[in-house]
Length: 311
Image (cartoon, rainbow, N blue to C red):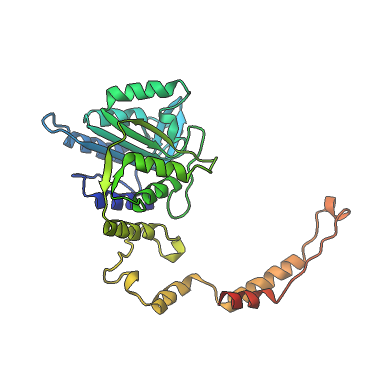
């Protein structure tokens, strides 16, 4: 949900999209496919040219019988076709609108499987995409044999995507600029390497942001990057500068509001005392007891020194 809301804030900030379908929360197969189908049919008009079509997905992905599926909340492997959305079905929907520029961003495990199953297939994919889409940028969060990672705030790939836009030095942000920055952010991460399939002249712009717009976007994105114990950002997060927002609270008020998430000194002391007692009562397993000697040692002075240093 945080991924969806943060990306929606990014898309809204561009001001370039005439219509946006946002689906989040409990997304079962019937609901999602129905909403997506209705959205596509609403815009299928041979007399209206669609300049750009962007699809973004964050969630679980799976590979079954060499086909990639977007896994939905009611997914059952024995009913994979019914309880998920296949990549082939999605592409058919997108192609039916004949967009001048097609963007697909997939943040899920095995995301790259959708297009690259072996080295020889990449060129075939590019050639086929040229026929299917006039210009396209496909961005996948991971290789076909990799997982995509996230924490309790945002998915790593989505966060890199957002940061690439919000921290761009210039004003006009090309899609290729986003690709390059996201790629660089994973350059030293062997466990997750994004995959990009591009059929374009690399001059296509995503948006143009002035410095003030980027500052506002950074503030908005930061709300969704906060740990959950600082207030869940999924439930109508405060907007900087608006009444009732955390931005209008004093430091003392913020500290008081967050104090409920922390333990008192008495609770910490009680926990450490119990931990010490359990450690002192610990014994080595039989197969180690004849080889090693277990010794526990406690330094009571570290805790107040740590508090003093932090202060």
